[in-house]
Amino acid sequence: MSLSLTSDSHLSKPSLFQFSDAKSATGSIDCAILMAALVAICGGCLFILDLASARSSGQDSMVLNFASQIVHAIPSVVSSISTYFTLFLSSILTSGILVAFVYGLRALDQKVTGSHNHKSSSYFTVRAAKVASINQCKAASRGRESRLFLISPVFQ
Figure 1 (cartoon, rainbow, N blue to C red):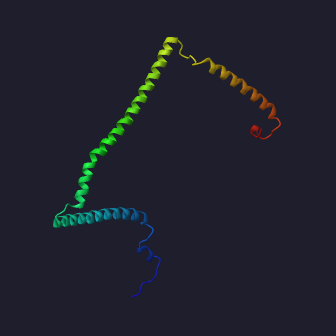
Figure 2 (cartoon, helix red, strand yellow; figure 1 turned 30 degrees about the vertical axis):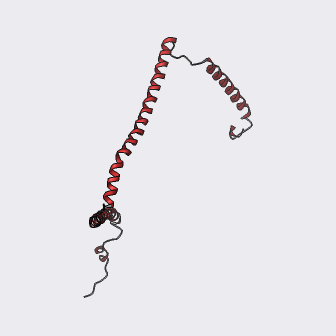
């Protein structure tokens, strides 16, 4: 019996590129689950071997000794973290109180002076007027000189 090569023969073969994205996503999840299971099983075996060797030699287990040191260190770590977190929150609260105090002083100043749109200083109004006049002079001089340049006054 011989098989003939027809145009329908390629339909029976699965394409390698059709499901490559789905297979790679599924494959990576499967790989992660298998690796986690492998680590758990190997870690458990090593823990049991450590306990057995410690029992036979009459000494403390290295893993349990390490775990007890970690358990005793956790309260000091938590206390230092809570101290720094409390300092951070107190700095935020202090900044908020200072901002509220400044706003309160501004409101009191507006009530005492009786003006709502009061400028803080006449120096700034004089300075702004001088800057505005200087800008007008510069704009006028640019207007006269821009006739010389056809492209843009940027080249001035």
